Structures are given as structure tokens and as C-alpha cells.
Length: 343
Image 1: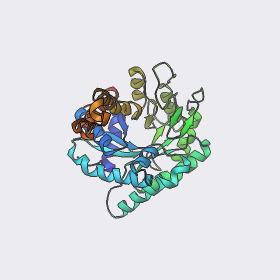
Image 2 (image 1 turned 60 degrees about the vertical axis):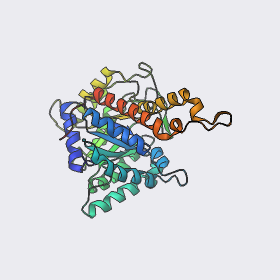
Image 3 (image 1 turned 90 degrees about the vertical axis):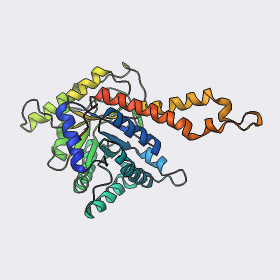
Image 4 (image 1 turned 180 degrees about the horizontal axis):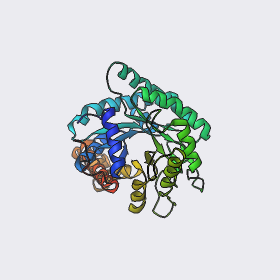
């Protein structure tokens, strides 16, 4: 199937919310990791989200120029071609973009999609993320308003992170402490500034103890039940029916989360869960294993020529793709998206 149209992406998110599942959002940094993600979604018969961070886009732009927009556009165009060979719907998303990178990443990419839409085509990306968690909430929401207006015009969904997630992501870091929890007041201020769909659709990355990077269960206190409180607080403020869920939530920093924590998050409105650390490891692990097992073959030891069949990138690259795809299948199972593709 082709990359999801704006209409299909909205349908994907609506179904996830209604049926209490979420889509894995897999960070990619190359054509090979893109194929691994697509393969995993296809094998799980799940639609999904592929995303590119600022660091990933810089890497994709090549080490000669390290241009983020070039890298993101190139992989997105590549994805629009190869995704047609996979029997699932895929949305393209750009991950964490802080204030100092907006002019070099999200705003130019919005411009690319604006031109495509004016020409009668679909946007290049289906959603973009504005990470204002390092700013005051007032400044964060002010910038979000500007971006949401442009995103809506380009048929794009905006993702906003209104309060800090702990750990480090592409150079943006926050301490792991008791402040990593969004309040009902934060949620109400967000609804006041961005509306509840009337000004454009957006995804909300709220903080409930999340931490980017690697951690073991129990090292961080996650409170996914907090998402219910945020929805209830906003629903009451705006006269919504009891039990309604005004927000489409995103789960950041989920590595090491228990299945129970994930299940609670899904019940409380999470429709997207970012997965990067675990898939990075899944991709790299078989490569390391291959190199250790074939040490003499991949190196020209003592003046010898080595073994081309073992150092050929295709040999170990296939192992990496298969391993990462298997981890995506596992993610779909945990998030209950397996078998939910829109046909």
C-alpha cells in the first residue's frame, strides 16, 4: 500500500483510540532500518508510523553536509516508493524538534508539504513534532499555535510535548525527578491554546514519569493512570460526557515499561508509542554477533585478504533487518495493533 493519505492517517488514529490500541512509531536512520520497520509492520499485519528525529535526519543527510531537511526529504521520498510493496498503511512522522532547530527542520518541511498540497498532492509527511518541553508552557503553546495553523493547512497532524520527559533525546535532556508529570492545569491550558480539534488535530505527549533511553522496569515510576486524570479534567472543563477522552496521547520514553503499564496507557487514550532504543539494539545485536563469530573473515588478519562473503554488508545487513523487524512485530503485539491494518 502507499504511504497513508491524510484521510487514512486520521482513520488509523480514530480506530486506535476507539479500539484501545496504539501504533508503534519506529525511529529510522537509513533505508535499511526503514525496510526493517516496514517488514515488521507487514509481518504483524499492522499499520504503523515511521519517524525521523533531527539527529536521524542529519545522519541521513550525509556526513559531508549533515543537512536535516535533505536527509528527511530523501528518506520520505524513498519511503513513498518502497512502501507500496508492503501490505500495510504507513504514516511518516518527524520526531523531537526543539526550538533552536525549527527553522532548520520542521518549518522547511512544512513548506515542502504546503507546496505539494497547493499542487493537488498529499503532504510529504503526515505529522510533525514540536518539542517545546524545554520552554515555558506559555512560549511552548504560542509556537504550537503557529505550527498547528500551518500544519492544518497542509493536511498534517502536529504532535506537541508540553512538559518534560526525562533523559536525553538528540541533545535535549531533562533531569529524572518528580517534575516529570503533566498536571490537569497544563492540560487545560493546552486545550485553551490549541483547541480540541477545532483548530487542527494534534497529538499530545504528556509526561507521566517517562524517560528517554535505556532503563529497567522499576527504575522509573510511571503513572499512566495520570492520563485518565488529564482527560477527565479537560472533559469536565469543556462539558464533555463522563468517560470521554479529548486527547490523543503519545507515549514517549517507554523502554523498559511493563505490559501492565502499557495496557493502562492504552486504556487511557494513548494511540502512538515511540520506540527507538529497543529497535536500535535489535538491529545492532546480530551485527555484533556476526563480527565476533567471523573475526578472521571480516578483517584482513596478518596480511591476509579476509572473506568477502563475511564482510559484505549485505550478509550482516540481512541479519540486522530481520532482527529489527522481529522487534517491531513484538511491539505491535504489546500495543495490540497486530492484525488491525486498514484493508
